[in-house]
Length: 425
Image 1 (cartoon, one colour):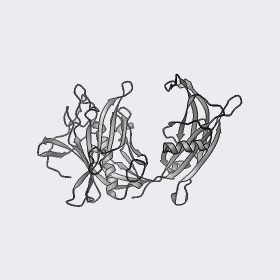
Image 2: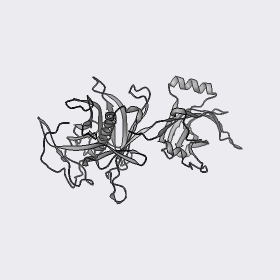
Image 3: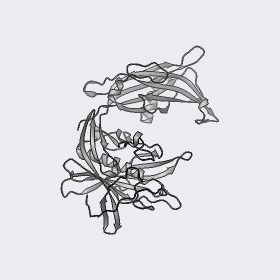
Image 4: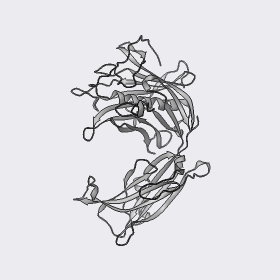
């Protein structure tokens, strides 16, 4: 498998030095290469030694992190109010929020006091052998103008390689699509995805049947009061099952509500083969994905996804990711862990996948399918089974969001009844 070139840009060691001490909270908004801006607090310091001591005490040195394709570093940038430049630019805007009664009034934008803005061009240069490069470490003078007191901003900017594998589902998850790997303009088949749903439920286990027909514009429901028995199996090109995800806890609406709630979340169990998918091998649980639906600000709602890594002998697991995806707009599920998590492969970016909004994955012009795309950090992949388990996780994320839709909405087409047969993994 050939990876795609990505880079990780980190901004850290932030600190603001001013000639006069101010009674306010200092913040900065960091923008880079079209990514969503990140807002972080900036400590007020008097010297760089104070900054380094503070970072050591807190055990951290990174304030913001951006991940982009390496090719975008060579793209012209026109960030903010500055003129376009040859390379991608990092823009840091520093401002303060006045304290009121000892508290910071974060809800009033007119209480912001702009101090200054720093812009730094990021050239597409990595060290020999793809080693990290320190773009900048030191001070910038900002905001010094006639009649206005500015300050000095300290920051450290580093770029390091972070290659990824990129996979794409060629159709909706419920239609058992082929999964391809993308590398530039090269599209190469690598997995197949088989979705199935239980047609009957009994003490002797699930009976599985294939999903067929035109269901692209409908909600998947096995009944109007419970959703259960959904399963996805990932196969390699030889036809061997290399990963799977199945609904281990049904999605059931809470009493008096039409949705799955935090008190009783639905869940998928992510499995991988114990012996790399060899005939007769057993499967073991790798992670559990819980999902429920909550009301957010105003009349909006979101699906909360919580991923737990299941370590040996630990039923509760280690939480790797917990995030909300807006129901109307969709969003991105991501695993991005810190260096102290104890998870193999080190800290930082692990994987991500984008999920469509409430209208399904068919909101593009002309009802064209918006494909499910999975990105995976190379350092977490040592074999094809490692990649397959994250593909199964992405499918489970997609299905979990669908399973959390309100139960009051009836689909135009139910899952088709078909002759069922016992189907082992």
